[in-house]
Image 1 (spheres, rainbow, N blue to C red):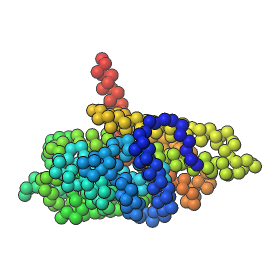
Image 2: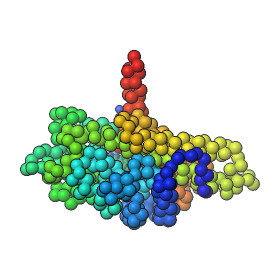
Image 3: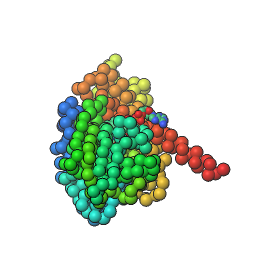
Image 4: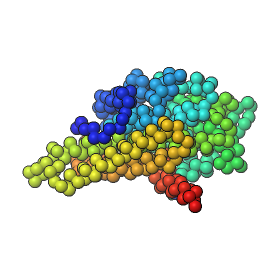
Length: 391
Ligand SMILES: Cc1cc2nc3c(=O)[nH]c(=O)nc-3n(C[C@H](O)[C@H](O)[C@H](O)COP(=O)(O)OP(=O)(O)OC[C@H]3O[C@@H](n4cnc5c(N)ncnc54)[C@H](O)[C@@H]3O)c2cc1C
């Protein structure tokens, strides 16, 4: 089904070109392999190479480091189109952008020159490592330490659930440089695959986004040179919060694309499935489900694009809006994919159709990069602050 353009999103010619190229790659390269990669849980290297050949990793990198100079909106457009076909492959691409944001925002000129051109060309994937077994929603509970020694920092600890773990070449790792300083005690380091004392542990077997890699990172006396610290010592948590504010619209875009793909599949199926002598799309109960799905997808897209544009405007504080885009779009993706399975009936429950995979893929979007409960807390916190300021 070709999506009729309902709303004018005022995309530039370049943005439209990026979006349509991403759609072409998704349909020509991802569609034929998505079921197979979901089943085999194999990392989508061929697709990553196709994306690299089409300059898709350049989209979010500034021109001076061999990028195309796009921002959050351009990145969202690519993630949305890839996720429309496979959210698991899309996240492997998106995680490389996530692993690059701190470097882009806070890296030194030398660090940027060293790492960004290889990220832009797609030669090297990146990953962002914050979560640990005892520190999920409560990121401040991390235990990984980075102690100053021998002209560098020695990292010890284990990171859990890291997207692109084992496949990426460059890891942005949050570790405590001064435990006793609480929120001011963390710093961020670039650690390269192959560094002595850095290895990979358990590879997770997941419910959804199974083509992506989610793995443990193990640091045992891993010495990283001083120049691999990003930004200033002690600013790790502040940089992390800012990074997540910037990346959450991308997670929202993953949800929008996934929901769009499920909506299209449901409309196609409802048109051709005959019961009681009629296509099931002629039944009002089905029509209303489809109408609600379409309303929600478009509303989520509007919010995600608006927040992405706000990020690109270099606004100072968009914590609340960024959380809203992620929460709303991921709740929409969960509802829309669940309803799409319902419209497919028993067939929707079978692996012969892509729809059960879409429902499995949707669930994680409500969980990672801040669970929707924790992000609702963050939105409420901003609202309470605003009320207090009025008083
Ligand atoms: C597939 C996958 C990929 C991931 N990729 C990455 C990655 O690349 N890098 C990375 O650093 N991390 C990554 N993560 C980690 C992810 O961000 C965390 O799983 C997520 O933040 C939730 O943490 P948790 O799993 O420890 O859940 P918990 O924090 O243990 O939460 C469990 C439940 O309690 C609720 N809860 C917790 N605290 C509160 C509260 N204060 N108020 C209300 N409810 C609360 C949560 O909402 C949730 O429902 C990934 C996780 C998965 C599953």
